[in-house]
Image (tube, rainbow, N blue to C red; front, top):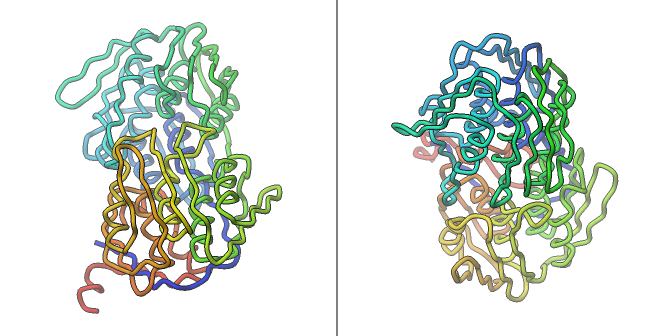
Length: 423
């Protein structure tokens, strides 16, 4: 099993290009099921989750090819409507195929999803919404089965804004008969990106990015070309990496508007933030000051940046309070940061972080994708060597992270278990 070995202490400086958004590419790939023709996607990140979604589409019978950051998908013929456990257990986003399959092919059988261990993320809102659209839903032997001759438009209220739920229902409603209104919908940029792709293929969608999304169903969607938006979480991660080292880092090919809450908090902590059209430069003093952060649904501070900012606050001057409101079990990185000397106290759904002058390198274990990034960020500023194990979590969502960090001056390398045993 691979691990990342980091020697801390280098000040990060330079430019890094942001890759396409994993959380946008996944629903867009799933949505290709909704129509025939050829879909050509560019700026697609080559990360494990994206490749897994490609494998899943291939199992359904789609023709899928990847070349660099370009993916071509043809779904004129589907041989199977079952998403097997062996694939779904590794990637929660597999559930995004449920809505498109039942909408176009009248049936779907999808294993209950797995993915990162960051608390309960039930799919009940997906299922309740599909039932409102007329699907017959059943749960048996760990699988969700959905059937419908043709879905029918409905007014659906989401008890809580759910990103994948909004995406699943928006895709399903695109082929439903009549009008669907999704109330209290999630507003993330990735939802707007999906809607833009669907509209380009003939869907009729209004209001994506607002609380209420209206979808007028059509009979079929055609193929289409689309460029995936930049990954706002990857962008924030590199800015945090630069900030913890007192660095001067510029991210390019990004959308600063999608990073507003992160940039505001970095500025509040004492960083000099300079924004251009598709670039953000963050210059950081030797030591930041502690701030309070509360994760919220978009446009609030993203839960996917919580672990990275906790690492940053471990070395900030003063005390910080970080409140997690989105997931109930997203503090598993805390014990690992404590192994590095961090002073963190857990109080229910919040962390009280007292900044230290330094952290010390240590062997640490990643529990999920964003915790992995948080531990790497901490290692970049720690004294000595940090080894982050279970980096397969990183590979699910970050494209060539070690190469990009080395380009900024970090001393980081990937080692296999065999090399580590001999060293």
